[in-house]
Length: 283
Image (tube, rainbow, N blue to C red):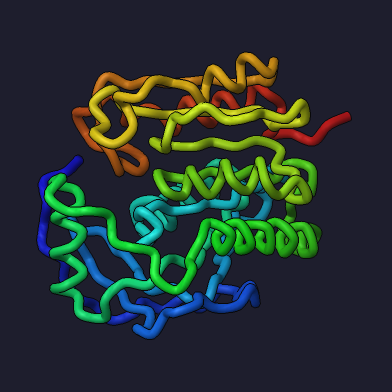
């Protein structure tokens, strides 16, 4: 994980293409949605109104595949640039329609300094993960993701998307949202999923589980030291799975950082999509 850097408050960026998902608010949330920058990246917290932002390929370049992107942030904030917009643009450049999901997160203190202290202490191991006030649960992000799948399918013709080739990619907490959506909301029917540096806990895998592409760095301080139960669960269930354990990259590397072996994961993911037939229409 990158060395801690100060959080700096910033004005909310323009999101002219963000579409509200109408999934409700967050119980117990009182602070307004707010944005901050850190390590040169853009983050948002206290999200109570979920949105979906389309990032579409240039006309004539779309291949019909689509990805719903779930940024990470420990369900306390969302890494919108590093794990959202930048990845979406990379997918669109490859002809894949991308949709950045700004899902609801748990309430955090309105004061940025207080919030920063709690996050710093948590990642340093000196403090607990902030409590979940107001009854926040993973049900909120899953509901948002389910609404996102429904919206993309409802406008598939308009966006040049094949309804049967919509997958989901999530980072860290977003990987957790991706898995929870896949396993508890079967109506979403993702064609494929890619949990990127998420928890590796074993799960019960249904026989209809989609193909899965997993990425983790061996030096990830959060998830690299508890086995690979998630991958084994998919293998035991006889479902397609590809697992890339990179030598280095830490946690939160997004598309990858120069000088780290994990920089190559996106190219591997695109090759995996192609070889599994997701980048072209079926017969």
